[in-house]
Image 1 (cartoon, rainbow, N blue to C red):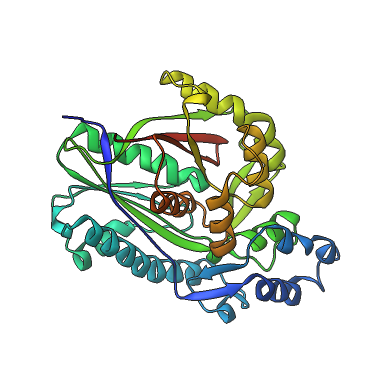
Image 2 (image 1 turned 180 degrees about the horizontal axis):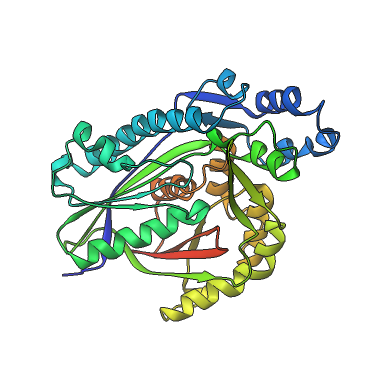
Length: 350
């Protein structure tokens, strides 16, 4: 019996409102150009992201009005609950499980605050048992899809035979700011969308795709690279350094270091499945991981179709890679606030 956690099912979901990138650019121009002289210079960012479409939990008109914490939080709670239920029901159906067969729920989200947590709010609607173990995780940002999968897999491995549900859900669009006249805010407006992914994991009874190993690297003195500031308006995005340059310089050695801890080398990896932060980040990842330009094809397709949804995005990439057929060993990677690199090695059963 193999007690490593295996993927039983994977599902993804987005909210109902689709936005075209050109539409978002025009809205941003209407809101910011008159007050921010550098806007026209930065407007090229919208075309250079590689994004065609994104999805939001509210219609486009909602974002054109100034919003504070109460409105943002109400929109988060309403939208997140609907999306959570939808993606979990899909994952359960694909796993041929009922909600009361889930033993542990790991929820990763960094774009809204809910106490009681999202898993508690939807427990009755979904039908979770009263004794279900709940593990809500906040603050992982874009690394959350990989770090959360690692956490969920270890919990599954600790109790073989139990069903662990992992949900990564982010409503990035609710952080849109009218008052932040900064390059970081323009970058955020050009990149982020909403989405969710859910994975069911179980250890002890085989499974075609297994979580072989995982690891992280936290760089010292990098708290300013990415994160949230908090003020009366809501979350404000922090981008203080050029992330593609950091990726090019640091990601390769970090991945080799993480792999070495689990007795693997770069050449042992048949495919990388990466969180795509944007076109420039994808190019930087290909350079850093010694991949040919264009290798990260699913990553480009996902960013084009959905934008950067933070934590769930890499699981959208994994979904496409699974549909195509995984090779013997794949390694998932993501970068997020901390500044942190997270890796999960997937082993395909022979």
